[in-house]
Image (tube, rainbow over all chains, first blue to last red):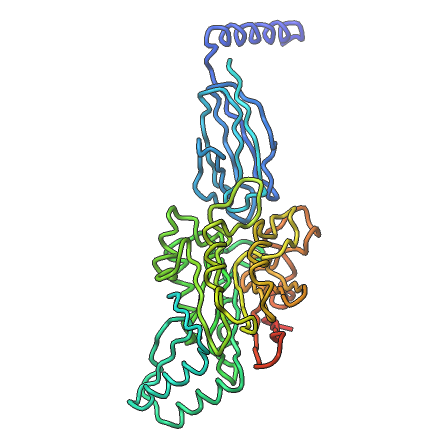
Length: 112
Length: 316
């Protein structure tokens, strides 16, 4: 394959992707928050309404993801356990680990 | 566990009860509001028990057993708890009882509570528990309360008397708020006040709870945000000993009449405050592990303000 053809193909792929995105604006993303060394990482993230946040515990100690308003609440997650929550409505969601409450995080959900 | 509070010289009263029952051939103790029979005894044994009363009181503290923990910091937390209990069994002078300052289990699983019970009961001592955050993971704290919380208040606090010493088991791991540390909560603080009402200032007090009741290292949540209020209530007492776990290492502080002390875990060590990016299980060389795990023994002698606390590692 020549370089020109390759670039052309790449450009076409981009166009197709853009067209698909335009056709289905509701396509939601999965965003990962790592739990590491007793911290939520990133500690604050901004997502779009409809996106799903997946927390993964990388510590050798169980943690929870507990919303301050109880909008969402995980069970205790052992090492490598995951918890996910889909944020349907815009707003600012503060959460913490109910076992180690000095661990805090925030999800900001923006309307699309 | 119940919250009996005898108030009126419990040591003497307990001896009297012992005598009464000894007369019928069964020795009962009411230590900690847990009446239990020591079985058929003769008068010699009864008087032995009374002599022990007169000498003072020695009890043991174990903490942070974390049954179910199997990560690299100690793949065999069950084995090291067994070692600790074997050492307790080998103590020539039988301690009066044990306290367990929480994190009995790692994940509040039934099997973990079962394992803990099977091993700890081999010490053949009464055990007074308070929960750690790892013991109340299930909603409603059902599993812990079913086993250890009978007769306790709220999430599991209570008091009892032994040899003239007033013991208070507090819970500072329930209903924690985001951004905070350990917490006792309004209801329990009120109970602490009520429980101490009418007690003479010369009554030695032992308070035990999972998370340290002094602010040891807030960056890691090592403290109890509303402990100052409880300590203010305890201020008028001449001898206060505060025993905690949670941080898996020995730390001691004396402030006025109050001695604060944390015990080792039998499961895994944790870093010294600030010595690592975060708290949590710390992997040390295999031959060092047992020097960082262990138990504590606490002795109270009548007329002495400070209780003698001896921390014993599994291996020195």
